[in-house]
Image 1 (cartoon, rainbow, N blue to C red):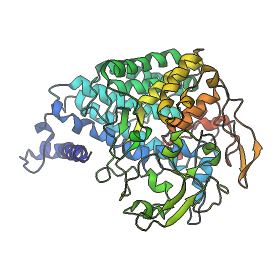
Image 2 (image 1 turned 180 degrees about the horizontal axis):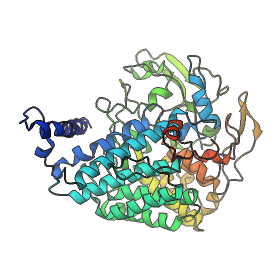
Image 3 (image 1 turned 135 degrees about the vertical axis):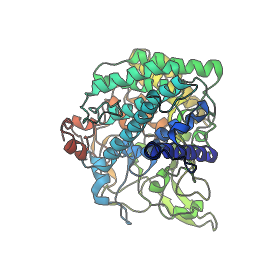
Image 4 (image 1 turned 120 degrees about the vertical axis):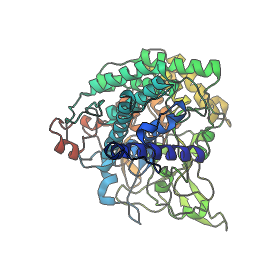
Length: 533
């Protein structure tokens, strides 16, 4: 991925230089040799990366960097916790507030998502303004560039709709008035409209030229996800539209072989995973040129530096919720493929350095070895602080499971089970019969033993047997653990605020939306804070 990032960075610098020095030329009419002047820069289809690159570059810190989208979606849900450790990790109580749903309008994680989404939106609006005004006259492929920018903008608004709900819709870069607030339904309608209008214009190619960018199928994956959650966003479910959109992607995969399930689950998340056919839309990272993928640093204890000969010492924070680990079938390969557990050994001496156990004392106190650690994204020997593993925002298994869930919820459980069995098949090589599930299975409740955790055990057992389609929720948990899916899935299944796990108790239904940052409400009187904050 290094060549790609070098090209993007250089191109972005050229564009920035062009815009910066435009005013100078108008005032002095000097002939400039050291910089590129905007009037002298006439983009063509070969310059698309330089035009849209900054819109995508913003996604890297937003998704997998410190207190990014990954933290927001996982730390608030039932699979990941960051307990206080002997070396610290209290951090002003931020992780305890995320776990207990006690966040406030000054909480860093949701505020970071807000600011980074609007950074991406504003960048897209700026470039759209430059193109549509003619100041950046593209000689060919103009319509596709505009469609791609509007799709990326819609993606940012999808994240805002999902997490903050009632946000301003800003499309005019030149407007200096304070933006007005839109309802969650209005944001949903805007996202759907933008995607439907621009998907037919987007490039249908699935190759190196569209990797990490919104081609037609990646945009359809966003649309399918929006339809999947339409009932949450608007009160009106759109299961049939979700199925139809997923079918378009599946047809592309079937007829042209563009997408497919990887034969081995781990291959989706390996260090150099940009060639995976399972990735429909990925966020590219690189250990040298795009170093923001540091999820592993927060997960691994410091002594794991010896296990992987790491070039830096990890920080030793988050781990798995023991109750979630207990839901796995022992024959499910995804357990070992997703989590680092048991004894870990010095790569040079072979000496045991730590033994991870599936227990955690409490969110306020834990030992170094408490809790299994996230190992889903391959940690190569000699790894740096940033991984080169690209982040799978949408993958083909996700498309299949969105269709399966929509089928299940519209009375076609057996059809859904066929798809789920297809996704499970690669994970039960030692016992293939276990890969098969039935429609009746998917109609059952969850195997998650929901309840409050005290002194290494559940003291107030709720269980998950009463969750409609709870077994399907389990399937989503096993397949997409550590991929920033869990908060959204728990909300859609009615679990996020109604169940207890670890030391999270039942919370207010208003917690399904994060607050609007206090700084934004303070400076813009048009914004009304979300209920409950």
